[in-house]
Length: 553
Image 1 (cartoon, rainbow, N blue to C red):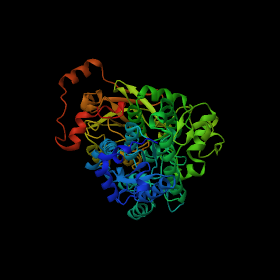
Image 2 (cartoon, rainbow, N blue to C red):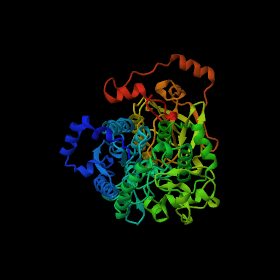
Image 3 (cartoon, rainbow, N blue to C red):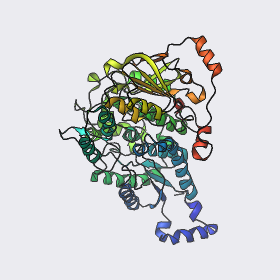
Image 4 (cartoon, rainbow, N blue to C red):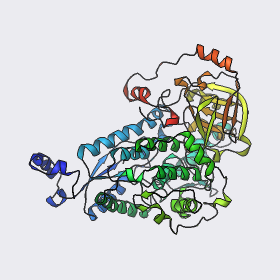
């Protein structure tokens, strides 16, 4: 079989290359086998990555079992929870592009015949998926797996979001320091990606839907031995893909992207998935728009509500049959399209899938909503669109009008909320936090959680050109496009302007007449860049708007 790696190990001119490879300890037998890259984001700071070396070892065992020679290399990661509400969050979304570039460099620089990618957490998974589409060599993604949920003293499940909400509860005097300390010690009890349907687990589940991951990838808990077996199977399966010549261009097709969007709407994933799947689709050569998302939303029932939209966590979805059971119901309902996955035809995988249990996974006929869990919003405040996790919004806040409380950064907004300056009825506007303006489109779990913790989630809305954590709940509308830095209408909002957020109609309306907006626009000047050197300065110059996936142009 002709191999890419022959270019670094065959022929007279490659004698120096072979000498270096023999220096790695390779035998002649290993030299003649396909070379498989195993790219890991293992590190000692992110809980979702602590155990990835165990998965990498299992993948390498599977590769060797199936006749390949594995080579492990590394890339970076940023923990969104640790980076939240500080300067570190500017670097989180940016890291997605750095990761994609680093994987490309590692794989192309060594001409691997195939690659198994081992990411964990929010930006690392989409970064590696973008790289897989760009490289277009046989590839499988094995993610870190979900963390188990914590347990409160009353037996209810807890997670990282419990702590973010607790900040507001302590501020409001409804939680004491002892309870806070208990949750600090217990809400994140194991390694793995934070236990709700937050960004990492959302995109990990979508990896199954678009065919780039093995069955169970999205829901097998990180600490289960079953995950090690899945990793070994992925190592064996990559060898089949190499021999059969199956690459991401045959897997990440328009049909597969459609299936990913459908699953996202069915389980109401993080709004970040709309950024990431849009970026993955663009890299795969099948771009999608917010109009495409809106169309899928209107046709897809929301049949699963995992935290923050409900009290259950990913481990509960695992025991209900996982993504196979969820997609099986969607398949029987005619919501999905036939596609090739890394482990075979989608239809073959979903044949005989477990039926919905009626609790964690509902039937289409008994859906929570006949619309998807994520909603596209438009209007004179967001002509290019915005997004909201509508499945996590209380019924009484699906339409809300109130005066704008305007802040030019997240930090000022958080100070105002904690300082008691936000009152029921307000519409908080946080701007200049978009892809270019931030730069890096900071996640804003802190203000939304403090709003919840202080008892304002059913009386206050929040709009931003930044983005939200998958743990965000309530009427929090993000990705407002165009962003303020680009002169979008959000830059023209003034304190006290009336704003209406109508989720049922999908509209964001700034109640200011066109003449007044024109006057404000004539007087507006973009602020100076916040960073003038380094990766953030380059990112701000190159990044697209949120509605296009915040990709580099």
